Image (cartoon, rainbow, N blue to C red):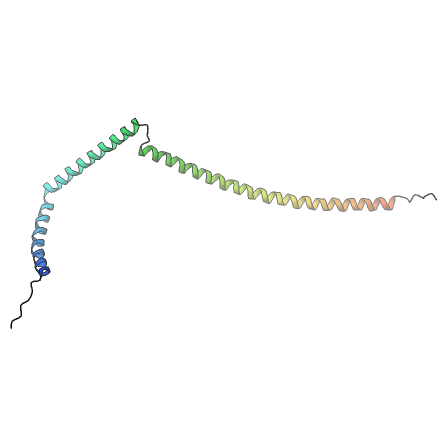
Length: 142
């Protein structure tokens, strides 16, 4: 009995692919290497850029007619908002620094006043003690 191999469609497909791929690759490479292809691509690019400019101008005109901001105007406002946020952050930092400095200064003044208050108390105590020593005793009537 002879054994027959079943037909493998994937092998057939791969053989066809390998044979046609080389031919198509050569044809495409020849086409890409020609000056006419480059000119055609350049013309296509120019047409696309003209179309894009037309669409942009049309959209801007439409937005102006309906009193709506354009992309450039929105970007400008966003830039202004970012600059404003940066300035506010800077002011917050300056205020925080001033707050810290004033807190330190207030604490220093409190310590100085407390020290002066203690010295004043000791002076008053010394004066009272001095007054008691120098004041003659007044006899009391019986």
